[in-house]
Every structure is written in structure tokens, then in C-alpha cells.
Image (cartoon, rainbow, N blue to C red; front, side, top):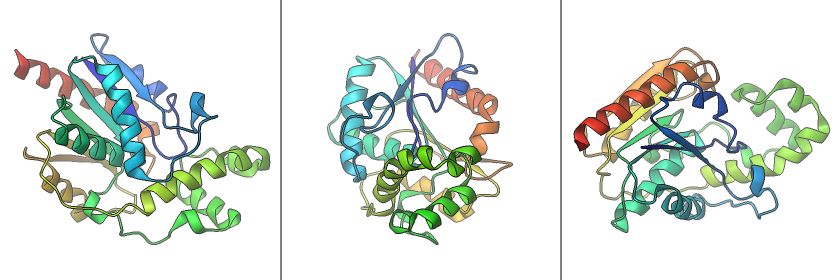
Length: 236
């Protein structure tokens, strides 16, 4: 069974490298990259979530080769897990056996936000990155590094901030949602994921903010391993 990870805004395929240390040796972890990120840096950035989902759809089709798999995504990656799963279900392709999402409010609440980051000035954007966390302080203060990452981050933020939710059939996939206790998301916005799955929805909160995952890779690994074990037992 494969665990396919989709990175957060500004991330790349190495964003979950430390998570791999906590994944069972019987599982194969694969990390997906969006155009303009990591090894795909020379490709044009995408600013539309649906276009991103189509790109990921083709990658998943190449990666899985009809093998069972689980999807995991953080923040932007969580929304992309959802959209690519919708696409897979619509095309009647092989669905993930489980979807695990962290720090991502239910899609119907995507429009609820205090700040629209992708339109901010560089200075104000930099301040929002500080508040959000997850981006090294030395990188935020280094003009050369920041100048490199800002276009990537703006593209990713624009994609998530301009996405318009449309109601559709619930997914035939169990969903587990994880969140930090200190991040700007309400319990209602997390429980909203129940509307997107035919199965009983599960969610768990941890100490920390939007990037609580950086301190909780062991716990997230355990959740993924348990989901994979459960999925395997249901297959047999």
C-alpha cells in the first residue's frame, strides 16, 4: 500500500521527509510536487486549485498502478486531496482507501478568512508568514530567499483564496482531519468535513498552530499507519 502526500503552500516533495521516518516499513511513501515547486521549479506556477487537482490526478494515476493507497495533505495539500478525490470519483477511477487532512477547514468554509494574503504588499505578506509559522525566521529575513519564494507562495495562496466551493456528491472515502488547537479555524469548520464523506468523520486536535505538524510527525505517522492497517484488514 502507498501513502501519497501532497505538500502545503510553498512546499515541495521534501516537506514530509521527517514523516517518512514514522511510516511503517510495509508502506511506501510517495510525495507529489506541483508545477513551479522543487524539482519542477522550471515549470509555470498554477494559480487555480482545479488545475492543480488535474495535475495531481495524472501523477496519482502514474504512481498507484492500481495498487491501494491513502492520501495525506496539509493545508493547501488538504484541499487538493479533496478535489483530486472528487475528480477520481467522477471518472470512476480507483479511489484512496482513506484521506487524511491536516490544518484545512471544510471546503464549504474556504471563503471564510480574515486576510486575503496573495494581494498583500511584500512587507504585509512577510508579516502574515510570521503569524502563520512554518516558514523559517532566517528565510523570512533573508531578502534573496524571500524574493525566490514569494512568487511561489503568492501563486499557492491565490489558488486557495480564489477557489469557489460547489456542492457535489459525498466522497466514498473515509476522512480523518487533524488541526492545531491554536490555529484560526473553528470546530464547526472542521466538523463541516462530515458533509464530504459517506463515512463517519473523525477529527483530532493537537497543541500548536497551523504548522503543528512540524512537531507531531510521529503522531501523524501513527494515525497514517493505523488507517493503513484498518484499510488492509477491510480488503482481506
